[in-house]
Structure formats: C-alpha cells, structure tokens
Amino acid sequence: MNVITRPMTFLVRPISVARYTSTTCINCKKQDFDDIFHLEGHEPSIPPYVEREGENVDLKRARLIYQSRKRGMLENGLLLSTFAKKYLNKFNDSQLKLYDHLINLPSNDWDIFYWATGAKPTPPEFDNEVMDLLKKHIKNEDKQARIMQPEL
Image (tube, rainbow, N blue to C red; front, side):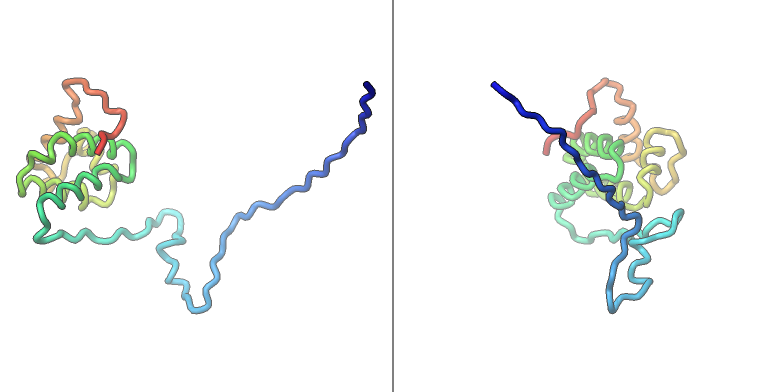
C-alpha cells in the first residue's frame, strides 16, 4: 500500500477584537443611554421600592420566595432562599411586611449580608424580629447543608 503525503500549509489571519461597542440611534440623545453606559464609580440607578398595597397574602409569599432566590449575589440567594423556605409560610402579615422591607429597601445586597452575619451593625429600621430570625438562621446551629437553594 502506497501512501502519498504532501506538506500542507495553513494561513492564519489575525482577527481584530472589538474594544468598544457603539449604538446608533437617529433620534436618541446622549442622556438616553446614561444608565446603560456609566462612568467608572457611578452605579446605574435602581428603581425606587414601591410597597404593594392590598396584595393577596399567597401572592406576597410567592413574590417574596422568588425575590429571596433571585438576589444579586449568590450568598444572599442561598441564605435568603433557605430562610424563606423555613419561615415564610409561618409569618403573619406584619412579619411578611418586615421581610419585604428588609429584602427590597436596601439598594446594596452586601448590606443585607453584613447585617445578617453581624459584620456590620443593623440599622434601627431593619433591627426587628425578622432580622433576629435571619441572624439565628445564618448561625446554622443545627449544621444544615446549605449549598443549594431549596426546590420550589
């Protein structure tokens, strides 16, 4: 059996990598994109929290479970989702309202984490029975594995 081999030559061309993305909009002004393209050190604006008046209790619990799971940072997602799974069904209306305020009023997820873990003092407006329960939950005295969010 005869095998004929020929040397092969490959041509590799460098490709350019885009460093900047531009948007083209005829009727747009620069301020239309201020909260999309922001200078370093300036965070995009967060919409203000609007309390839902007259919300059905079951709907509120479902919303709070979802919001507890879908946090900006994984640590809070794990801590709050396991907390919600354990306590939300037992909460009365005032406790649900306190929890709603706790997870929706602070604009920085790290604040909630630091307050709950005791790394920073809890501000008076969030220092209540729900925060006390959350702090106890985070201590995890019964050594539960909390490496995944609970199933819905």
